[in-house]
Image: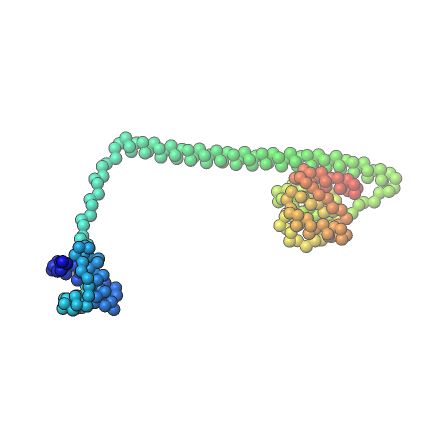
Length: 264
């Protein structure tokens, strides 16, 4: 014999509350389905009953009340008192002294690093000045020897009546650094040679002009710049093409060799 299940007022209230939630999400849900879903969600298996049209009809009154009763607003969360901060204790004299020593130490270390960097910078500048002076002195000695040989050659030409003053030689140097350009101009000041000194950017942009000699400083110019100027040489714009794979010392050696060969 099957025992008929009768829902208590508490169970009905739980089912009613769940139906409110279901109706809010799906207002068009039928009475039987809403009642079945609510019962399955809030009642244990032993307290569930088969939902038929007869059951719905028998419970029609309170089901309709459930359908149209508004869903109550959730209760606001209780306002909790803020958690008090732990008390702050005064820093001891020892901690203050230790913090002061550490800050002084950091400041002293910063000053020492700055002073060392200034000394290294001055040392680097001094080495560059010494290097520049040695190069200038070496170039000057080479120029003096070259000038002596030229004077001797000129006297021989005069003695044989073969003297003809050579015209000024025009030289373009591509890829020279600005600091090197100053050294070269000072070293050959007063000589029968005119320079066009272009760095790598200018060599890539300047228009090719007619000169006696072009010197490519291969360390400081790209292959595209070399290719740009090489056809101009083969096309007859330049009488000579020289590759210099070094710095200002090697460049001056090449220039001295060119001046010697051409009788300047």
